[in-house]
Length: 167
Image 1: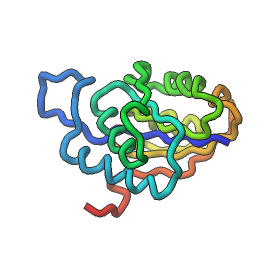
Image 2: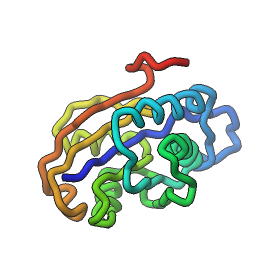
Image 3: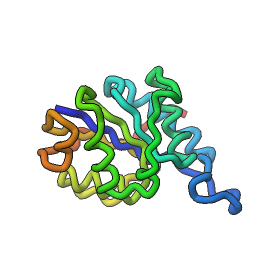
Image 4: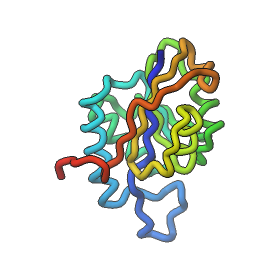
């Protein structure tokens, strides 16, 4: 059994039109939601064995909140260029190469790929995973290379507006 946690980046800012899509930071709501979701999730799961992230600023900023809450550092975050566009096949290809000794992985990615991949793996019918949404998936595999060839169960799906989190 393996556990996969897919996290959509927190809400990003469109304030500075001169920034490229890759360089957009979190806005105030994103800066608020990321640590709140990380705290909430840390009470539900054990610390993931590996943290993998798209190289965009907004995903790295979101991941930083989770790393801090789980007692990790930036050195524990693996950046994967192929996650920038966040297609399902890119996520699957990266997961196929996760160390087999790792029982859990947390990926920080983008939409629509996160929603599509959660639905593909679990047979769910989630219309849209909102910003800073997190899906937890149980995978009936012994090796990450089997990722798309196994039964998978959606354990949970949380997002900031769906929770009554303290401000």
